[in-house]
Amino acid sequence: MPEKDTDLLIIGAGPAGLALAAAVADAGLSALLLEQQPLAALEAPAEDGRDIALTHRARAIMERLGLWERLPAGEVAPLNEARVLDGDSASALRFASTGKGDESLGWLAPNHHIRSAALGAARARFGVQLICDARVTALQASAGGSSVTLADGRTFSAPLVVAADSRLSQTRRLAGIGASMHDFGRSVVVGRIGHDGDNQGIAWECFRYGNTLALLPMNNRQCSAVVTLPSDKAPEWLALSDAEFAIRIQAQSGGRLGIIHSAGTRHHYPLVGVYAHRFAAPGFALIGDAAVGMHPVTAHGYNFGLYGVEVLARELGQARKAGRAIGALPVLQAYEREHRRTTLPVYLGTNAVVTLFTDERQPARLARRAVLAVAQRAPGLSGWIKSTITRQLMGGVGAA
Ligand SMILES: Cc1cc2nc3c(=O)[nH]c(=O)nc-3n(C[C@H](O)[C@H](O)[C@H](O)COP(=O)(O)OP(=O)(O)OC[C@H]3O[C@@H](n4cnc5c(N)ncnc54)[C@H](O)[C@@H]3O)c2cc1C
Image (cartoon, rainbow, N blue to C red; front, side, top):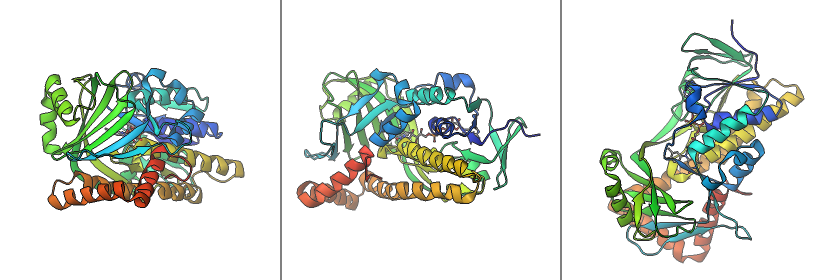
């Protein structure tokens, strides 16, 4: 017999699944989270090298869900400006706030703190239950009710199953939903650095020849260094001593941050963008990276996860109030339509830009020089490109 009575089964207690559990509880629904990791791993998530850039809209959602107040204040860094450099060119394309006052573009926070905050916010809701050591291996979904089976044989059923089990979502495959994948053939190596200069809250994106370096400003004279490189070069970067890593980053940062030292462990992520063909089926929906897995350099992944959480929770809450079934396809398709409209143009656009800016071949080098030169010199076009990108970063009205 299937166990537990709940409105939603959410597969995966990552930052997206946990935020959804909190949001649907606020909309008057109950949720049971099924997570394959042990509880200890969720309660003390390991530092994973990801420092997550968050937009204004994402912050507003996190505030409403009580995630923001759970982030340690000293770990949240303002992002005041972003600058893009191509090769050894001295001039940078600058992106600053479009706001009236001294608003920042956004904020940066370590992923493991976001995970802890999301767990705290979900657990604070009466309507949320969490079962750990629970790996989902089978799914049956229909408008009349859905169920999942765990590796240990237990089964659970609910009117709606939501998969929040990462960009390589096994549940998405079990539901028969395909996904477009863009393998960039590249990886990122990320690591914290300390520096004696002031980073002024400025993020640098340096499209160099051989690798791309992003420097994301954190507090206490630290930055997150994100090196994008051909995947076969990643082992070499991971094997560097701390001193060798610092020397390379210092050389590539052009002395902008003064003397640099390594300030944390290095981590490695292969770069694959994923976009699910559908976000909904009868009795089933996708959220977070399982729906849209963005290239990390675009800094949109979790922001989009939160936007999706907001829309899906709103649609489910409205359906419940109107007495409609929450697993009914039209309810879920309303979420799918809005989330696709928000994410697809950015997914396609940023994939094209990232490909152009990490291609080492001569035509691509010339093309990106031209794009930056035009954006820098043609005031009208430059203004449009910059304000579009800046609005995306800030996630404000009219963005995304
Ligand atoms: C280097 C890097 C930098 C990034 N920078 C940014 C940024 O600046 N801004 C931004 O917005 N985003 C950024 N992102 C993206 C962001 O980290 C992700 O979008 C976000 O973590 C996805 O959360 P999620 O909950 O969807 O998935 P995940 O965090 O992958 O969580 C999925 C969960 O599902 C569980 N699970 C998987 N399979 C099963 C199963 N069968 N049964 C039960 N449980 C299961 C897993 O154990 C896990 O806990 C970055 C990513 C990387 C790699």
